[in-house]
Image (tube, rainbow, N blue to C red):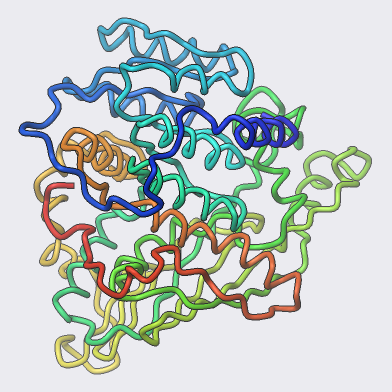
Length: 458
């Protein structure tokens, strides 16, 4: 799926109007009239059945109320592995669309699809989600949703003009500890929120480079010679300098601070360190004479973004996928009464903690404020990926489709959280100049109410 192919596709969309014309109204229809009863079967299609797409497929196959009606991937091996999973689950292999980068448009013409899971390279996320909504189907979109600022508006406009929702499949929003913290924030345990810290600090060098045969490590190839994410993801580190992957950290923080629902991102500034670690990795693993040792990687090793919010809070986001380091999303919740930190799993609440100025382990608080979703579904989530959160995020999408209601993480969240990427690039390119963050809700954030995690529904 090359960038040139994507540009050609976008030109086609501009001329033809893609799959189906927009509805006449230019404004959102925020709620559906629920059906008299939930759908008996949710008919799902999958665009992209690589490693991530098959993670979602596996969860869908556990559910008797889900029927997989179509697959799309240009890699025949990915289709073969997906079909093997489907047949092992005792189900019939569905039709597969494989002929070219625009094969998904043929899939979207089917009338036996209620929702579509999109797990493809980033540059295809928005075009595929827009086409899905315009085809009258729910879109379940992997992160990040957008690459450019225009794409964030494209998502919002497609929803508002078609009336079909798009859910960002941000699984970290369902992490057990951050949902417990969300409960505590809503019960005023931290007092008035002041500050949050988050990020994506994950050594991805063996994801960005491999031997062209396996997804993780074994060589220093990428692009045409790479396999899986190295085939496409590494090119972003060559071409771009900014926070390329903000939503894992920012999603939970946005819920703590009621972003788009009583609060709003206002502006950001970003800085980046020099770029060293990817080049050093290539030299160390492949030698100074390897062709990729001559590549100029643009992405700074550590990118720091500061976001100001309408209600006076600040958020610091760290992006570090190049450095040798243990994994951490670096969560921190700071209010007028106390603080929680992910690193170290520790908490301090003034007047509640046993000793002044002394950290406590978070474990007892997590048990006490465990979210109802986890209390109800922990056993079902136990075998799911990423510590169970994959179960919850796909369940949230399926239940939204099943009940024909708005999803818990919506298109406005997708647009606002993802736009941090292009705006951070612009800020860095302009010497850390402040960049205004658009109001994708067009003012509705002032009266919108929080929805995520308020019940144990989804």
